[in-house]
Image (cartoon, rainbow over all chains, first blue to last red; front, side):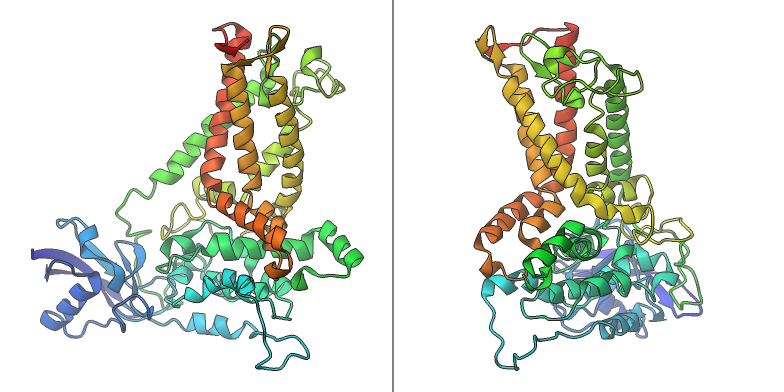
Length: 253
Length: 265
C-alpha cells in the first residue's frame, strides 16, 4: 500500500543549513534510501546523497534517521509509524560537504596511522601457516564494511572535536585488536593502542556495537579484550612476572 | 558542552542535542533508579548489625559473609572474629569493599553508570553536556584497569559464599533443606555465574592467547566463559536481585516475621 510520508531532510553545507520539509510517496517494501531517491527524482534534483550498493555492503549511505545513525539502504520504512515525521540528517561527527554527504577523511587518516600486519622474522610471504581456530575470532572483525557509523556515534569524538587527534575510534581500535590477536603478527600493538591510539578514551558505553549494521560485537569482542591485553602489558605485575619466569610474552603465547 | 554545533569543524549546523524521537531517556533513568534503590537497601542492611543470622538452620546473609567482627554471633563466624565491634564497621567489612570494587570496575556496570549517572553519554547519539572528556586515560578512572585484581578476590569470596551455602543445609540435629537453603544456594550459583562471566575472567581463561590451537583446554574454557559472558549484563542485574532477596529472606526469618518452610528435616 502506498502512502504519503512527511520527511524532514537536512539541506545545506558547512556554512549554513536547515531541515526542509517534504511530503513524498512511500510504497510497500521500500527503505529510506528509496524514498530519498524519489525525492531526488521528483522534487529536489540537487539533493546530495552518497550511495552505492543498496545492499548494506558498501557502507556509503550512512546518515542519521530520527537521530539514530543508520544505513539508509538497510532501514525499512515499515519500522516507522506512517504518521510520524522522519528526520534525515548527515552524520554529525564529520564535516558536511553538502546535504547528506559528509567528508569522512578523518577515518582514512586514522587508518593510515595504524602499522600494517607485520610477519615474524624468517617467514616469507607464501609461508604463512595458521590454524583456523587461531584466526576465526578476528574474522568477525573482517565483516566491517567501513560505514563509519561507529566512528560517528562514539561520543568521544562526536561530542568532543578536540579528541580527534588522540583517539582512533572504535573501528580502528578494532583493527588493532584484530592484528594483536593475529597468530602471526609480530608487532607490539598493546602499548601503542593505549599510548598512541587513545584506547583509554573508550568508556565502553557500547554505542559502536549498537549501531553496527554488521552486528559485530565491537565492544565485547574487540575493545574490552584489547583493554585486557593492555592491562596484561602495562598494569599486571603477575603477568609480567610470568613472562619473565616462562620466557614467554602474551603476544606469542 | 558538546561541539556538535561547532562551525569551525565544518559539521552540519544542527542545534538540537538529539533528534531521537524514542524514549532514549528511559534506560538511563531505570539504571539510576535500580542502582540507587539497591545501594540504599544494601547500605542500611550492612550497617544494621542485626537480623543477619538464623541459628536453627545456619542461614547467614551474604551481606555479612564472612562474619568476622567481635560483634558476630559465635556460630555465624566460621572464619573467626577479629574486627572490632564498632557501629560504623559492618560485620562483613573484610570482603564488602572488594565486592563493591569488583562491581564498580565491572565492564557492564561501567557502561551502566557512565550512561546513567554521569550521562557520558546518556544514550547513543544524545550529546553529553561535559565540557571536557578524557575517559579512562587518567586518575581516578585509570584505576578501572584494576578490575582483574578485584576479580581474583571475588573468586575467593565466592568460595566463602559456597561454604555458607553448604552450611545452610541443616535441620534438627543434622542434614536438612528448607526454602532458605534453596534461596541461599541459588544465590551462590548465580554469584558464581556472574563472577565467572566477567570480561577479565574471559581474558584470563584464554582471551589473551593468540594460538588457541596450542592450548586446547584454555580454548575450551574461553569458549564456555564467552557463552556466559554474553549474559554478563543480565547476570549483573539478576545477582543484585538475588542478593537483596536472600538478605531480605534471612532478615525476615531472623526477625521472626515468618518461619522457614522445610522440605527435608
